[in-house]
Image 1 (cartoon, rainbow, N blue to C red):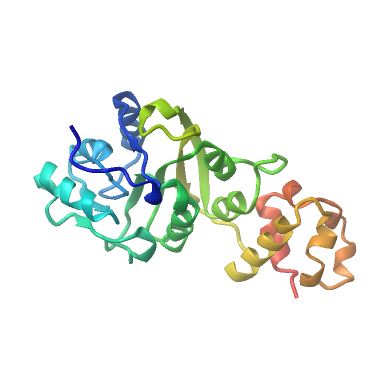
Image 2 (image 1 turned 90 degrees about the vertical axis):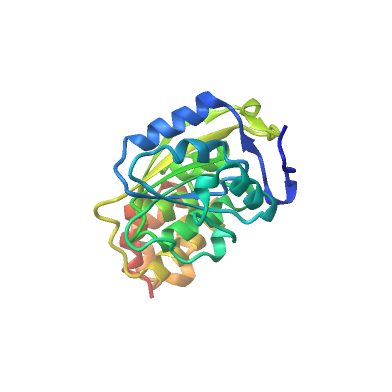
Length: 252
């Protein structure tokens, strides 16, 4: 009998399948880290496994007060390790590097990734559960219909591996969609770009009109003469992350 309620408004779907929990823990165990942040521990299904990891400094960030009370009561060893706020309002919770893991609330999963990008100097790896179509979008390569703003902005700094699917029946309550677990590993050499600001502007402008030829979608960002270059005959989804990064140097 659980001592908490599930809140739809917070996008709460709690993992209950032990096999999946073990798969996530095993994937995590293949990387070396000494500090770990769990995002949205909820009822603690994954937390229980993470607390057993040897020699790891652990913290969890949870917005829902009812879950914070439940976790403290159920896992006394979490005393002093739960940060009661939204991850979107959080400063880096550790000095030095830390790994991020979580069954991310689906309604803010993209925002969580942008938060990780802000912290990228301290976050060498991320293990996240997402709605499957979001997970595929993050992992997809140029030429795919799933490839878009999220794919390019994340892959400029991280290599993405799609690990496995998680069916709705593994959750309480079951979501209406499939889920997927992905791993992000920080790139040793991120793409060189004119500036992060220019790169983001270019990627967002290009994909906001993804059906248009690039020349028409981004014409306000480049010198008219340079727009004659062959690369502008393509559509946004045909350009690699490296293509976007290189083009940022040519922007006005």
